[in-house]
Structure formats: structure tokens, C-alpha cells
Image 1: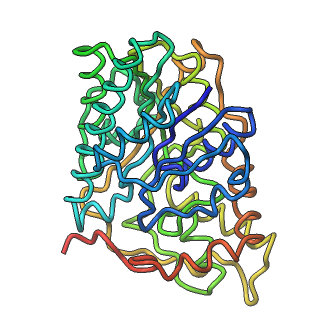
Image 2: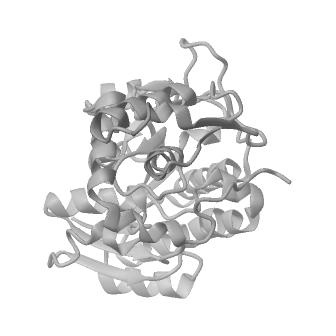
Length: 349
């Protein structure tokens, strides 16, 4: 299968590409190489004869048409998106243009190509989204997001992803474009750009800096190891029912404060800190505006229909992640100089 992956130089997209190439798929990586992209993420497969890279922006329809015509993919995995909630608070326009208009362009380019090829039944447009479109959950472990949970986005980021989800469903219902959708919980793991919580905590800890936790630290997230997520995404692409959505969760709910304390314990073991635990660096800071209290996914559909479950616990995945960052300073050190990294964003001022 030849798969066109948008955003393939990013965190999740690169994990998908590494796994897809290892399984013998041909992959075309379409990426605009914005601030969070890094081609080093796919260096391990860049010389594979089945891999190709296209430097293009999903807001550029002419470029998309050229890429579809030139590579003739069997499937699309659409991951390209602005994804950092704090940045969406400071600059929502980029999120509207990329996540909504860019997805519209991808849908139209894919539809045009699909029609030109005679509407092949095996073609797929897989749209990858987030559980944040569902809003916030109460502190009740029996209540979780399902595929039928009403949308209730609270941030510019989640609103833009909700809009893109609706576009994808509309293109299926109106034009018959064969689509599948997935909504995932919080990802973590190797190659995570150092502005998200897990890499921020690891790298600040190693640098002796404060470990910032928003509000009281009791916000709860379900954590999904990125390589597990990549495996689930390829499974949905291959076996998911057309027009259907699948929630992908890690089955690992943790409060932010508990997650950070777990990371500190792992770091204490793997890279002991002079003078005590890394937990001494924990610092509570002003909360993010509109900070959702809890996300949690009920993954029954993907488990029952496709037989998928995550392979690692949060403790196993975090240890793997810390070990990776300790061994790959050459990857993350240059990224610390990129725009906005290491600074508080999204304070809402």
C-alpha cells in the first residue's frame, strides 16, 4: 500500500511513518516543516526506497493536486495540524487556517484524485483527531468519552479540530469519499517536541529548572504511548469500517501532578539528582484559561471490532521515554532554541 502521510515530520506522524515503512508500506511524507517539525524524526527510514518526502503546505491546493497526481496514493493519513493548546490561545488564526482550511484542501484534493481514478473502493482518507473535541469530563471514573459523545470544544485548538472532524464526515456523507476517523488521548514518547508536558518536565528536570504544573495539578488525562498509537492508526486504516470513527486511548488515566511525580521518580532512578529528588523542583503556576478538568476514553469499539489494546502501561511507557531523552540529547538540544520553546505561552493576557 502507498500511504500519503501529512505532518509526517511531526511527533505522531513520524511514528506512523517509521512503523509503516518497517511493515513494507510505501510512504509519501508531506510536511510544511513548521516550527515543531523535524526531519530527524524520520531519519531512520529516509533512505528506504519506499519513502519519499514532499515539502508542501496543506493550505496550498495546487501543491496538493500535484502530489496526488505524482504519487497516486492508495490511502491518506491526515495528521498535519497545529496542535499546541497554549499556542492556539495566543494565535488562533494559524489553527483556523491549517486545521480547518487545510483539511478542506486535503479533502478536496483527495476527492478530486479519487474521482479521477474511478472512485476505487479500496481508497481511504484517514483523519486523525483528538479527544479534546469532546470537552471536559466530570471527576467520575465511570464517565468516559465514546464515539457518540457530543462535541463540546473549549479551546481554539479543539474547536478547530472539531470543525475538521465535521468536514471529514460531511465529505463522506455528501460526496461518498471513503473516510475513517480516529480521536486519540494525550500522546507521549520518543521524538515529542519539547513544548508539551512530558518532555518539558524531563528536560527542565535535567537542566535544574522549575517543573511547571498548571493550577493545582489535578487535571486528569488519559496517556497513550505514541508507538501504540501508530499501531492503532495503521490498523484502523486497514480494517476500520468506512464512515466510522474510533476512539484510541491508553487506558492510563493520571492527574498531571501524579504524572510529574512518576517522571521524577524515574529520573531519580536513572539520573540521580545531587541534593535530593527532582520532585523538589515542582512549581505550581497560573492555570491555563479554559483548562479542561478531565479527559478519558472508552476504547470499547476499537477493542471489540478490531482487537486493539495498548501494549504498555503508563509507568513502562514513561520509563522508555525518559531513557530515550537521556540517550538523545543531540536530537532535543537544538530544538530548545526554536521560537516559543521554554517560554510560558497561552496565559491569556
